[in-house]
Image (cartoon, rainbow, N blue to C red; front, side):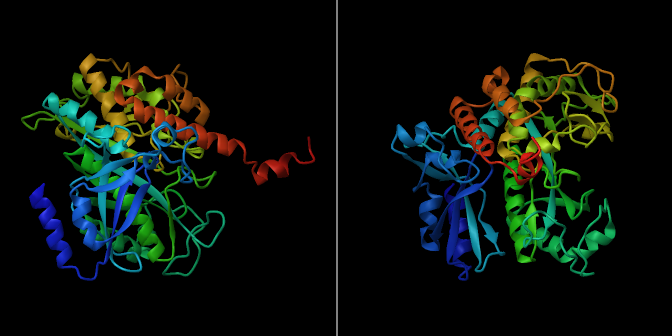
Length: 451
């Protein structure tokens, strides 16, 4: 990695306007956490000499330590080593002064990967594919809302062109894309600077809702990096333009949720797509992968829907799945097999909300698919429509049920290391308990004098 470090340092030498860097790891909630360091400390960070506590990975959504966390209390909140991921230097141009991000992941004192790090969890799954001579090719689709940052509750943004507040749905509206062209252009430019392969952008179903797709790449670790960096970039550019970008799964109870759809195929050593057998149905191997995805889906739901708000999105007739089902060209089910040329045969996983951690999502999906391939699991018959009249297994209907399913799931235990599972469960239980202690205004208005 010496040449890569030299390239970064040479790049920084040519950017005298950059005086500080952001050195950060990604926590279990998908939030970047770390330090602002002087540019003079770049070499230290790149050479793995920067230290941060292991517990940083497992903070709850409010940034609080997990009560009783062994990484805090039994070890004295010990530090781990921060290794550079090797993902270039990522220029940031939406802050008050130009800076750049150095993406890191955690290792122990001996330099071994710290398995509580979500990026490490995905890397372990990809190592298993590599041992079989296989490579997942992955693309992602992320939805988000633009909202007015001055409002306490989400409301549509004011159009930079008309000066009117958006208040209606505008699916695939070219006019809405045009109105927000300056914002979208800056996203594309920032992504180009960071090597994020952005593809098409559309106005989605909700008020001020957009979807931007990222191109497929033959490196799922990079695809997850891209998704994490994309969310951060969109939020930063939105603030620069006077908006806020919201990746909540369901910011409006009555409108469309924000999804995070994952498309993937798998190629062998010769570069052949093993999901393609020349037919419209796809290969047996593809169906085995679907079988694995379905088998692990219910117990993995906490990864795909990790927050209290996530379960507002997983509702019937909302283009978000509630049942463990698959189908061809069917957007109503959890696993869709898109049409098109057989050479591009792939699987679309539609369960995750945009609020999920991309590293954990891809680890859960690719880990379950590999399990299905190795064990030749059958997916059963494909489902048409929503599968009405069929007896289909259901996803956990609420947060508490999903936590319990993840905690006891045998397939999840095969995909994720114990230290990560324990940390994720503890984090989600603490968040659940905090929500349980907070009574909403709507509850007070409904029950205060009526019961």
